Length: 445
Image (tube, rainbow, N blue to C red; front, side, top):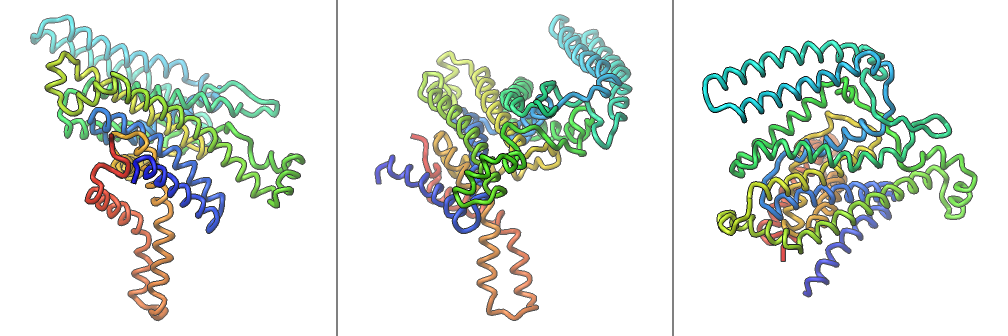
């Protein structure tokens, strides 16, 4: 079969599965799968940049996605003025103090010759600076978190724009998407500076550990994002359902399509999100394809295939690794901001390695590592299966256990096992692909 025809058929199959979901279940479910598939495809592209282009084994994807979610809070939520008055300036002073301590220690290390005096000076700066930082920072945090802890208890965001009804402007959250990429890129630069000189297995351990540190900060620093109290009610870049249902023109158009206003408003909102997400996916995919075909992309693949030979040709391997690591992480950060925008709330405890690291890796491997279109296909296909396998598995087990008597221990055990079908299926798919198509469904050319 021609390669183009085969690839088109694979994407057509995924589209048919989503349409079948709309016909058999509901179009709301189908569009929700489509939207999360678009976001998952963007995450897969980010990981494919790192692994498929450069062979960097990053298992800290979860941390970069969470930073993207944090960006939506920092950018789109209105500021808590009482909290700023209580300790906002002092928090900023504390953060600057901590940064200054680190910079001072780095300057001493760079400018003094290795000696006991240098070591002692660094220790004095770090220990003294730590206590100074806590002296400035801790009282401010306590004051901020004491301001209406049930409702706010944090500094809020930077969205000072309000609409005619006095609500925060929804379009501002779109600015959080590139900001999420910038936050993730900054974290990647710090991680890359520390870990990219390590072997691949050590890089994996370092990225996993730092992702857990990021999650620990987001769960415990209430002044920043309310911690485990969560931030809900994020502004939306699309209308609210109740507003559409109160619009006579929309109600008339919905009636013309044979839909009640409640159903039509839900479908409209999901289609609007799908349009926004699709534009971002197409833009990132286009850039990734241009990068892949450029001399820079050929150089990255040469470094991936043989670092020693590339270094012998005068290429700065560590610097190029840092570039691609930052770019891939930024893409994951953008996807994380988009996902939090869709959810309408930021929940730090929801970020789990199984969902935001393992599953993204399965998407890249199954779709085809090193092929951008393969990464996109894997994002859609694996997300569809992740959502649908459990209800399909329950239905199959119900059909299989129908001959068994009600109250049968075996029947009850099998039906309870349907909850594990998701993990079983992901492992089975991964094994089958690695056995029969080890380079993925759309392999690298």
